[in-house]
Image (cartoon, rainbow, N blue to C red; front, top):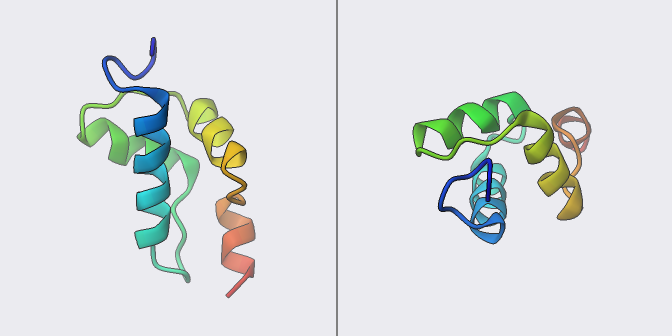
Amino acid sequence: TDEGGTRSATAIRAFIKKLIQAEKPEKPLSDNKIVELLAKQGIQVARRTVAKYREGMSIPSSSERKRRI
C-alpha cells in the first residue's frame, strides 16, 4: 500500500486487531497511539487509515471500548 510500504492492508488490519486485543480494557488504545505503535514496527499509516481499518473490522473507538468495561 502507499501508506504501509510493503505491508498489505490485510497484514496491517491483523496487526491493529492484535494490538487492540492485547490492550488493557480500562485504558484502550487511541487511533493515534496505534499509529505510533505501528510506526515503531516500521509501518507508516495515517490515523484516518487506522480508523477506517478499525471501523471496517467492526471495532468501536477507544472511548466506546472504554465504556464497555
